[in-house]
Length: 165
Image (cartoon, rainbow, N blue to C red; front, side, top):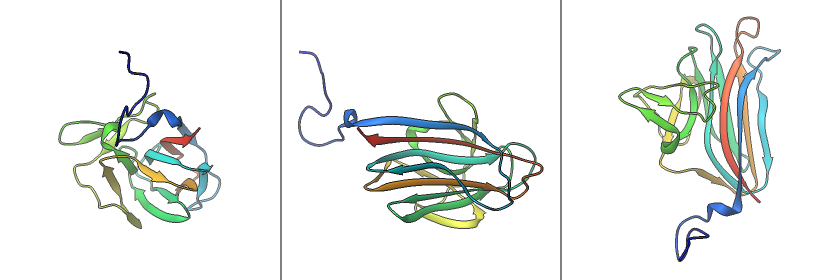
């Protein structure tokens, strides 16, 4: 008997009801330390990955994640190799230093072996949060990024989410 839908009975998440999306790239910002939206969703869904790092040098990049009107993550990255943000276990691979795995490798970057508790809201510190499963939202998801030196660096980011179809 072929399996056509998960879960077949009781429990679990019916992933077939979500349209999955991603956004990966480099954003050239125009004002130092001012957030710009990269994802703004109205509706219900889940978040699996949101990260940012600087494209060059040891400048600072920032990320802020708001779910259902509440900031659940805000942090900085102070290098062009270590990302700030949130990632589910399924988006990671590596050994002692976990490498953030993204589908198109636009910004493969590091999550160090030191991680923060969820939620983490502290723009003055490096914040890397690893979650066992996606974060679900009921009404909205907004992801914003910024950098501290727009003349010298850009924000490289990666996001994975799903929205109820």
